Image (cartoon, rainbow, N blue to C red):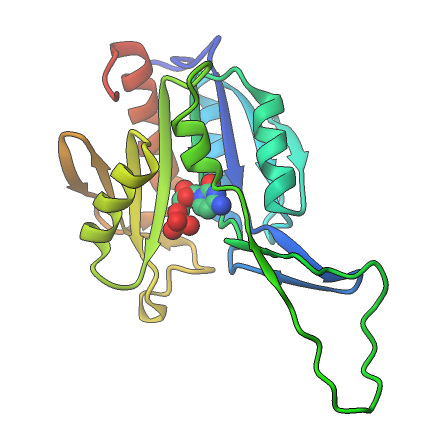
Length: 225
Ligand code: C5P
């Protein structure tokens, strides 16, 4: 690939977990190091794209040379993505919590010794991938989602692509024995309208470079949607 093939292009990348507060000192969250999202943002940057990197509280630092928008909750993440539009492509690599605590408390919940347990009530979070995929105005030309699955990985991911309305799904098997979660390698299958393409086990950086290359091809060659 020639360098700077994404010059003049804007890509929004979400990454990391979201933290959904229970009270000022407690939260619920998904497990996500943010490593794959950060690698994707860096790879897109290396191809010349302007990258808006919307990240929850991740373990790995954000890459240099991208615009970092740090958020905590899914609702903040959706708003930050919306504020970053328009974009040529969106890569939703964040592990967004499906629910937030509807009865989150402004003060710390006390263990008062009575044995009475706090009762959390949950409310659904916005599905950022489904929302951006179905935007009537200003939908990015290419929307890429992720599917971290433990069972029937390819079937579930293909169904997810349809349900969410995105163009591509990057499916990966996050069974604990794969060592992928929190690790440096990833084994993914790229699912599009055309079918499924399994990539060999690669470093997350290499997965990111391949994906960025495919995004460049799709944007420059009209492939994708
Ligand atoms: O439904 P599930 O969480 O498995 O879907 C994963 C994909 O959807 C990922 O690309 C993730 O970033 C995105 N997602 C999202 N907003 C949510 C939930 C998931 O953007 N609330």
